[in-house]
Image (cartoon, rainbow, N blue to C red; front, side, top):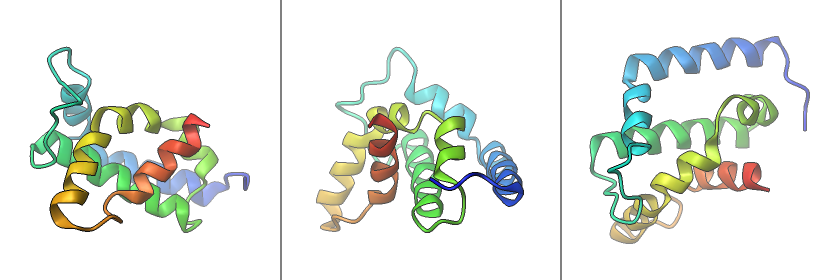
Length: 114
């Protein structure tokens, strides 16, 4: 993996700001709540949608070398997020008939899980 550079740090801070502005903290809080069931999670639910969009964006940036995957995986527990919303992503794929939906998020989570 490429060593993170200064531009990666700047982009990471911008992603953190975007996440804060979009309410990603509340969304992740909701998907990690005791009453959240990953097996029945719905991709149309706001918190799930936010996490899916957040994860897919970051996965796309890392896939295309626009930010260091090493830095992202040091910063975020991507595999844990995917474990909570992956079922909803798979349901969205099936419903839309688009197997590529959220594939970059899933790939990044797989890279972290090893």
